[in-house]
Each structure stands twice: as structure tokens, then as C-alpha cells.
Image 1 (cartoon, rainbow, N blue to C red):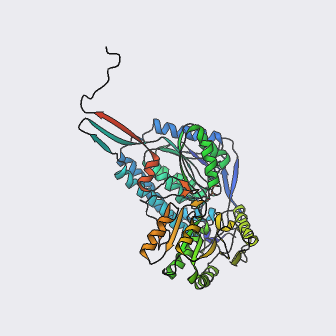
Image 2 (cartoon, protein in one colour):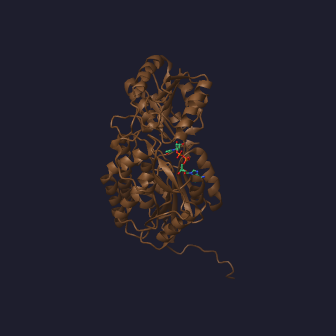
Image 3 (tube, helix red, strand yellow):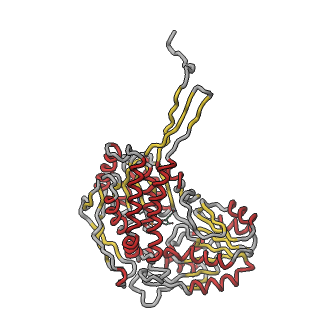
Length: 499
Ligand code: NAD
């Protein structure tokens, strides 16, 4: 099913190396397909080690010999702001490419593209004000101070969910700090970044500062991780992939930022604003096609409100509009790929085998068989130890678990390997803070859906990741702190060998 609304110009994807759009060294390609009908959209170069070598060499040369690192901050910031403007001027085109490539409903895709523009604006501003150091005066005898320096060539590896926004979340701070980089986008969603290379060019980014190598994770991605001239890897993706990347990066002692999987709890107490909690719970797991790392995929409901809440929840989930992602009214589009759809469906099978009940959805919406569509799905009768309550499904699937007491729900919420986000709903201030601080997760939202403030640290604990990005935390990762010790007087120096 290709909607007439989807009209957007698509070109064959190219590698972007040293400021030039090029074929990959081996000439091999693969196809990117439209999740709405599984028809091929265009070809994508299947890069390998040779492309990575070329891209890293270009990034290294741009770092060592090019103007980027030494440029006045005001000039660097001006280029980043022009990139932001370029994104914001092309929201519609980039959103259409993203929707075509990923199945993200167009309205939500536009929101993500705007966020991408804001990421560049925000980190341009951060570079202006926050690339600062510290001073450590010592009793008038020493003045020690720190400076933040760019690290060098960064490797950025991104997933297929909200691929454009997530790439800019890494790119903007990486470039703002004066690094150069090679980006390896996910193989299922190459289009928006390919279009972005022209925006970057128009903004006047010096060649070689930003390079893109498309290709499979096991070849292009792994070569980037192993490359001795790449100093750091910022990775967003599955936990298992993160583990593999850390193993492969050990021999070249990489610095890692790991944004990995999640299975985030939404905890609703009986005293909560139940209408708002319902809105947030539904939006939190079914938006972005359920392919959201911070999705609240485990809903814990206090027993006294379980029945009425679940009745309303069922009704809402049944009414979620599944369909053509180019239709402005669509709330849930097709999943990224047939392989991923089958994986998500596999979990529904597992849920049945484990004795849970698919209370709403679970099937393919009528007439949409050609695409990777799945109805919004609600699973009841779930126990916390079931696989569907423990493993990341990464689709429009919500599991619901009742609880009686605060202590019990904290224990259950924490009884999972992940620790990315959590959402707590209660009008009791004391309880809200106590529960939030008892949850093992990198982030908690109280009486809120996932509203982001770009200054705050973003990241997960446990198997959800290592490190934090966002605000100054991104600069912690993308800069090297150098300490300079200055003697202000004649301090004692032992005179070995003098007498
Ligand atoms: P994935 O791990 O399969 O792939 C992510 C990227 O890694 C892709 O570009 C892929 O090509 C590459 N890759 C795969 N194997 C590699 C290897 N051996 N070496 C180097 N690169 C390799 O993840 P995905 O399926 O694209 O994305 C979904 C996952 O991402 C989910 O688990 C989700 O929770 C997670 N995610 C996390 C966050 C966060 O901020 N914590 C945000 C978005 C997505």
C-alpha cells in the first residue's frame, strides 16, 4: 500500500566520505523497503571495512589538519545553527522520508524532525556557554586548571527507531565539542540521514568533519568499532549489540557511551489523577509504533483501581487508529520490518503459552496484510516473572500487572534486568519521591509522560546502558579533560644526584 500522500523524492543512498557522496568500495548494495507494503524504496550501499577505513581517514585528516577543531567557537556555532535552520526548513521533506522508511506516523515523524533541529540549536548554545573548565588555586603556590579538548574521531552507531532524531542527539554535541566523526546508521532506516548530508554541505561544514558509512552492523559497524584511529563510540541500540561492541572495542581501548534497551514500569497508585495516568500510559507505549526505548511497557495498577482502569484502558487501546503512516489521523503505523514484526508476534505467542491473555489486539488489521502492521495489543493476566514482562518487546504491546502495596510494587518494578525509565503516578508527594528514588532506573517521571528537557542527563542503569548524554553530560563524553598545573612560586624540588 503506497499512499499518494507519500510523495517525496528518493534518491539512491550514497556513502558520505570527505564531503563527497560516493559508492561503497565493494560496489555492493541492499534495498531499503517500505514497511507499509514491503516494496523496495531504493538501494543502499553495503559498506565494509574499506569504506570505514576511508571515512576514518577523512575524519582523522579533518581533525588533525582541517579548520574545525581550531575554529573560533562563534564560527563553529554559526555552522551548527545553519544546520539547525536547514533541518527546520526541511521538516516536511525529512519527515516524509522518515515515515516512508520507518512507518512512523507522519505527525509523530514531524515532531521528531523538529526535535532534531532543536538538538543542533541546543548544543550550539551549549558550545557557546558551557565548554568551560575549572580552576584549583593552591595556597598561592599553584594554579591548576582544566580545559576541555575534543577527543578526536568519534564513531556514532544508531538504531532504526526515530533514526534521524537519535543521530542528531549524538552528532550535535559531538561536533559542537570540536570532534570529527563517522556515523553508521541502522541498515533499515538510511533515508533521512542521506538527505541530511546535503543540508550539512549547504551549512558549510568543512569536508571530512562528518562522514556516513551505510552498511550492516556486523561488517561496517564492527569495522568502525575496531578501528584504532576511532577514540570513542557512542552507541544506541540493543543491549546484546552493546555487549558485542564493548568486546570488539576492548583491544583499542575505546571510550563508550551505551544507550541500550528498556522495560520501563508505569506505576499507578489509587490516589493518582487516573484520567491523566491513562492518557500517559497509552501514549507512552503505543506512540512511535511502540518502538521507543523509554516505552512504559509494564503497567502496574494498584488493586483497588485495577478493574475500572483496565476497562477504560481496553476501550482506548481498541480505538487506537492503525493504518497508513501518511494519513494525518493515524496513531499507529507499520513496524519497521517484517523480521521485527515476526519477533513481536513471537512474544504474543509466548504470552499465550505462559498463560497470559491477549485482551485486545494481537492481530493484523483487515486490509493491511501487505505491510508490517500489528493491532495495538494489551496483555492481561501477566505475572512479573513471565517473559513478556521481563524482555523488551519493542512494539505496540502493553502488559498489565496488579499490585497491593508500595513495597511490593517497588520490588516488582526493580525485578528486571533493565533500568532505563520509570513513571510514577500518585498525588501523594512523599510517596512519589520515595518510590521514584527506590526505582532502579536512570530516569523517573512523576505524574508525567516522557517529557524531555535537553539539559538533563539521559541514560539508563543496569542493562539499559552506561553513561549519560544530554546537556553538559554529553560534553563529559565527547571531550577530554586536560589538567594543567602551573607553579606560581619556587616550590621544593628534591635534588637527586646534586651532591
Ligand atoms: P541494534 O542493536 O540491532 O542495532 C543498532 C545499530 O548497531 C545498527 O546501526 C546496527 O547496524 C549496529 N550494529 C549491529 N551489530 C553491530 C556490531 N557487531 N558492531 C557494531 N555495530 C553493530 O538495535 P536496533 O534494533 O536498531 O534498535 C532497537 C534497540 O535500540 C532497542 O533495544 C531499543 O531499546 C534501543 N534503543 C535505546 C535507546 C536509549 O536511549 N537507551 C534509544 C533508542 C533505541
